[in-house]
Length: 212
Image (cartoon, rainbow, N blue to C red; front, top):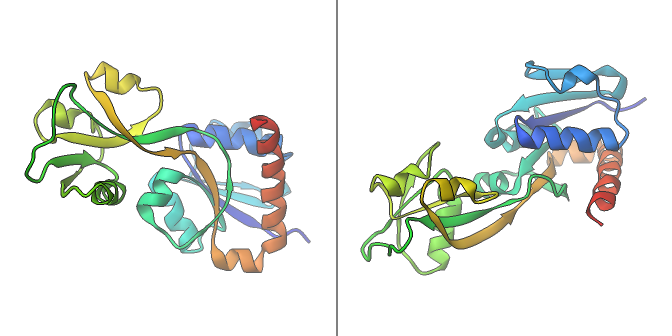
């Protein structure tokens, strides 16, 4: 009898790309799955249940065992530092974290301010550079911070660089490349290892064919 799995999925672009990977891996997901506004979607014929969540919450659901598996960006993994295993780099939604600011400006010599929604990553990065900074946590419109004098620099996700350019900002330093990962709850992996390994292998096969 097939073991049931619960997978936490982030809404938005990662969800769409992950859904396509699952379909290419042979999972029979209903057409209405794409446009559903439900937060919990069951697919009985595949013994799968999906929890749709905010990206930052996916590792939390997996760590606490309400989801066996999850799909999360590496940025979320680095920031949240949750007790989960990373099984597979899905190589979807590629982007990177970078330091950006107004062109031709230098950071304040005393406690420069850095605005970001990634305080853990940002503080760790500047500490490695030997710089003491003040982190200002924001939840959105990070690009606004240098424009209004709130911060010397920002640390944020960069995909095409268009948003920075449109707001008159430039990239100063690249911190780390980001893709989405398949993660698993440690206890679930011990209890449901065969089913989880099968799902991971099917996805790995799809990823290897896409990225060759």
